[in-house]
Image (cartoon, rainbow, N blue to C red; front, side, top):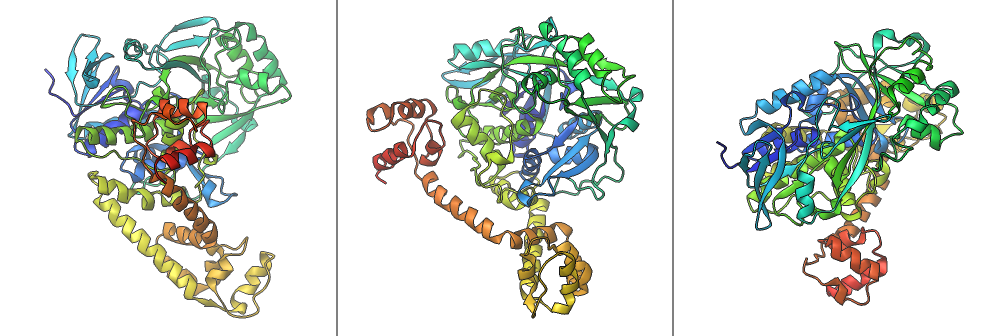
Length: 621
């Protein structure tokens, strides 16, 4: 009934969709298996993509040939660039999406790919022979042969939904949990754990009084995620901001005795940086209010997502508390919020290419690895899909370094440190974040994807070459153009910047704080004429390169120093217990994780600099 597929992807959430298209665009024949074809690429939680550090990841996915950025641009209802008051390393794109259009666009793009087939059914197990995966087994007892398998099960593995004192099996509201896989993986020797996440109630936007809330508009000149010719937003929906109060908190507290979080029914750990509303008022009892983001679900629906009000309290308590929020006095609720517990597997059991150590050609991606967020999941799916294809071809794995991408930071953190709570990406996790900006993801990563053999990147690479040439031309012009005092002193006075006393090159003026190329071009026509011949993104990137040249150079020097450690390979058969100079903790951690390089070993928690010195001596360095 089934041919032997190169790659079988289990689960069609954000990780599964990216895994499928990545492997397909590498040339593999792919089967995407999902329990429900109508929920492909469902935005299970908030209807948004991007945000701080997450926006950088979406741009990296796009630069590597993934589809998340393209789908978001086609289905956005609002776009904002966050953190513009800070340095460019912190600028992060974020878009509100139309939930229905988002899923429809993903399915449309998947179905248009000739290398992707679909099957709707629950996968209950794997076909494993001789420590190598050879396919999947379904609830109907079918065995589907595959040379590699990518598991992207999300919150469905033995999922349990909690609402107050009620609990029932499910991977998402209205959908059943997936069973069988965890039990088999445990028998194979995998270490599993439980995690918890939650979602807020959805409400009827027709019953809200937006006049009592703060309006939050999108950017006046909205940007986009993809480096391809995706459409820019011509009109946008506003979001709104509301606040809880002591009255809201007091109402919520009346349900604490029935809360599964506080009475011990939920054992899994929830996300530290996206806590439930009951957790917030319990942990931050001194705060008299918390912010709520009132987010529309799309163009053609009145459904509203109440971001910041995630809860597993009884539905009557949720409803009573919501009605006490200013602007929500007449609110009608579509459905209550809930918490969900699910199985995950410690990512320290993975190789850097996301392949499991115990079973060859088996890959994990997304929440099964203990992460949270569409963006984190999608990036892992992309990397797992690429590497599943490469494994089938017996080719070298594709591994991004921490200095290459936020995706590299994410995977490196997971496989070396593991996680005890849902992992979320932040800019602070990336030590080279000045290099890993959202504006240069295409320059960093598209050449790597093309070198891998990713299909459909010729036009992208042409854009990269044009962008590089444009940036170089602008930088050359700014370094050579002499500006006279009378041309700029009026502008500089308005910026509280010292006047020019003689002719200087324009690039030196750009180094001053509060001085921007955008403003200079308005007062010097020759500069504006030159910049008009190049795309806006080239102008922005050239200015960043020149303003932060010293910082960029210093970070690159750090990368070069660290890369020397990355070049020292460690063999998997090293018996660390035979190196008595290592600390006991280092011997245990190194034996468990089996790092591939000295650099990777240095990032394992519990491995000290003196332990690294011992390893360098052992390796003859």
